[in-house]
Image (cartoon, rainbow, N blue to C red; front, top):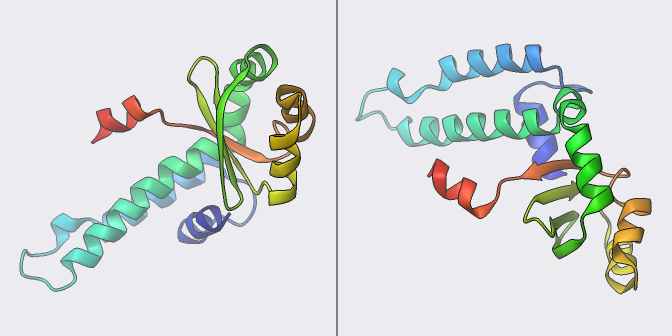
Length: 152
């Protein structure tokens, strides 16, 4: 949740994410913080490069949780959550990562420890997830390990 709030603050997003406004804000931020605007000896260059990476990461992150993106991918998501089993899961803080049996991973934000413990101890985890996680928390499709390697 901290990450979401940090990126929303950076892009000045109040409530729902509007992709058109997000794109305009992204372009303006990239122009302002682009490393090519600074000389090699400038002491702010490291800060600018870090901010540039943060802007790019934030843009892609906010696109992935935008209502328009979720709506466009809803058929695939419903098929995945209704038909596939859970292969693996990890809970870190308020983030629950679920890997489905086809290898697709989703991140669920704001999942408290007590809900995770009920999910973890449930003898019917898929059923519990359908009722209490899949449509109850903000989610996004996470990049797989191979997708991360391709972008590096």
